[in-house]
Length: 154
Image (cartoon, rainbow, N blue to C red; front, top):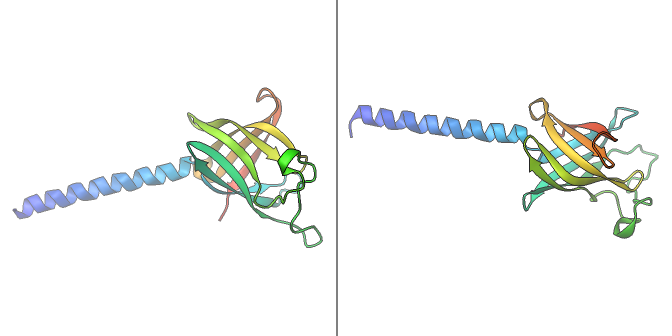
């Protein structure tokens, strides 16, 4: 094989590899899968870290870490939850369930608020180049709800 053919083959290999890496980088910034820090609406301080994972084409989110004041219970239970979640540890609890991809957002699932034990319909979307996650919980229509912005956890 001549030197020019080797050079051509090497160039093609580099181009394909660069393209694949660019696709991987793009996928990372558009996927909500990963660890996200929730921010308290009132204090603006970090409240928890939620690990979002995909299972059978649907997204789920589990509470991985809680940011608690020293005087607070470090392993609280969900005393306002109902059913099987009643009095279960909040740490490790799956609060985000069954979200399905719908264009640029994930919809059709639910989110549970351990503070009041209530479950809401939910939709999420990645924003700011993968740095933020827009989380909308609502009753009935999306118009009647609340939006939080979670930030990518380090």
